Length: 235
Ligand code: MD3
Ligand code: FE
Image: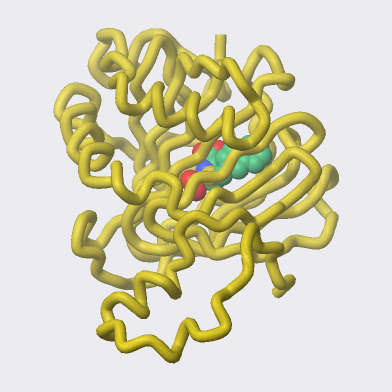
């Protein structure tokens, strides 16, 4: 695995302090650092960590209106990742294809509104990554249980590929698979941890990517799940 670039130096005496082990562990989680994944793609380590409890509570409220469901691909396969959405449009797949739909097909009603906490976080993270003025109108919420995975794909159902995508990881860690512009390009593996935010734009927007099968685990805030929020400008 490639050694990521870091935003700042590691203190030479990082292991020489008398901090208790729990604090040392927090440092090892490396909040606040940046990992450059591409010319216009950056991982903001721990960017959403303080806000995570509020984000997880909001996911619960969204799922109370538009429940998580396992959608079916056009090819007839049920996805292992459970999904729901919030915002003006939601990403859906069924036997007829992929699309953004203003109506949740499971309820026949609009998706729940985008919480301000979501839209604000997406705009802040995008600005931090060099995309000022990002206004998301669609948030896909992915829920991974152990074994759930996302095979290598491109996101190309959005209208304007100039708009970035902001992704927020919550709960159990995952191995993110990051390829190139062609499906056959070499794939890098990057750990995505609780509170991590990734922003993808410009030429990196159409990169093939996926998520390795989730490992078993227990997280204090999400139990046996990993959640991923992807904020898009869909319409
Ligand atoms: C790179 N989700 O929902 S987030 C997806 O962890 C999706 O649930 C993954 O891929 C997940 O479509 C990965 C990171 C991500 C999201 C969208 C991208 C990376 C991306 C779009 C273009 C390039
Ligand atoms: Fe994707």
